[in-house]
Amino acid sequence: TQLLEQSPQFLSIQEGENLTVYCNSSSVFSSLQWYRQEPGEGPVLLVTVVTGGEVKKLKRLTFQFGDARKDSSLHITAAQPGDTGLYLCAGARATDSWGKFQFGAGTQVVVTP
Amino acid sequence: DSGVTQTPKHLITATGQRVTLRCSPRSGDLSVYWYQQSLDQGLQFLIQYYNGEERAKGNILERFSAQQFPDLHSELNLSSLELGDSALYFCASRTGTDEKLFFGSGTQLSVL
Image 1 (spheres, rainbow over the protein chains, first blue to last red):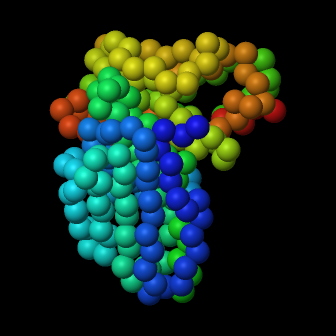
Image 2 (cartoon, rainbow over the protein chains, first blue to last red):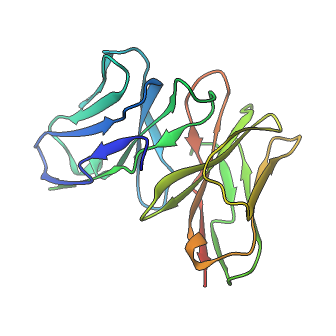
Image 3 (cartoon, each protein chain N blue to C red):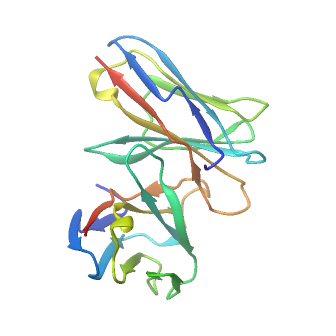
């Protein structure tokens, strides 16, 4: 069982559409991070959310941290083919040692022209 | 370029063998993480070192071991390899004062 559950597992949309990816847990996290991974490469950090209820925007990407710090979402507006990739959420539980970062299984996003 | 260097990029070996994967963290980063990524398991946390000391352990098999050297580079040793050990192995580093992880490009291990 994954500590962080991501949904959906796979998302295929057309250019210009919007999409939302979810990351849920029954545990409280001190912070959550979102990464994007492309084939043959390591994950690249997109954002870190720290405060419950926090909303961060990165161009067309909007990240939200749940009030209880147990869940997060990533919303992409007007998706482009360059947004294609594996989106991963990650975090260290508030009760774990500060270094124990764990990842969700990821959501594979495919944006077609 | 993340600044984290992993070698080799590809490794092909046989069952029962032993291999060593190497990671050089970003300049100044004290903390090194190892992850295993496979299609069915996703990105699994193996182990973390901070300034030469083991700090956190995840789902690391007893056949696997790691260490971090005084110059802060790290090695992951995999022994008695099995077919199921075939995966991408990633190293990541962080400064220790914030929570940003920087990943290398990984080592693709194929056990035949």
